[in-house]
Length: 185
Image: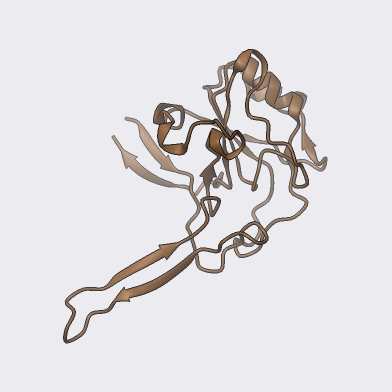
């Protein structure tokens, strides 16, 4: 039996977003009443609200848009690695022992969960050499429970490494043991 586990945290009005980015909002379009038989709502948000993947178009003007990506890179066996620590960057040597037999999708728990309504500052990120080494070993997806695989103040957004290997970065995921099974097969 295989289980698909939903690692996306719930979207909530008032949730923390990148400073200056569009917030998550819900508004009522229609309400049940004498002239209307249904409730209908609309939502608006930034593409970086909640758990999200950065399509290559996000950091490369000629990159693929999200609808051009193969879902196979995002669905399948994954390993959750507890990579919490006190240094600003998580290095390869810190997680190397957890990689034996690991699938090409790795999910990193980098912080203790804070309040979802706050935007985390000073969060731990992945060292560039770590991501480089993961790309060389065939990793296709890196998920992190923080806003970015890159340091908070980084102005670089590197997603293609040695030999043209691309790793997709999934940010703001839930690495909680209480993540909800979405589908059981």
